[in-house]
Image (cartoon, rainbow, N blue to C red; front, side, top):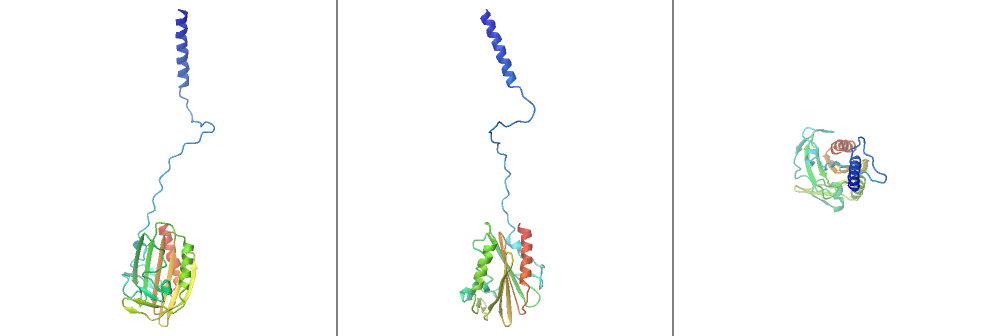
Length: 227
């Protein structure tokens, strides 16, 4: 009988101990020494979604140093090849070798400005990040190789020879240069951002287009929209 009572008492004590162990305690959980914190869930970073290249070009009515721009297709007057070939980087707009290859999106347009001047832009967007400093210096070297008279060939025929008269890195990510002959001048600007490259060209009977200032302005405009 005593043994039976002792068994009942032991059972009651064990049950009480278990209840005490499972009683909830208010307050903040404390991590045991040496225990690493559980990883907090990471918010998914949004995928890079660039503005379409077409929308980064100048639009109808946008201002330029030569007045408002009116967009039109790049016509048959633009060169498609150059003699000698080492002047392609300095003279070509359409099919220029300067923008890095494998762009994800490309767009180009010509523009009518005041007077006989012809202006054109191309935009290339890239999935992978570019090194603007590297692209500009590589382009600087390619343009500087044009040391002879360059003859541009277009669907409308051959153009009179032009020569490289000026080239410089105008500012961070901006290369500008000029091809000239007695009665015609073409100014070029290459603008390189992390994922976008702009190539601009303006040809006119008058020289003096402020390409360095204009290309730097376009860079600031693009930078505000692509970053």
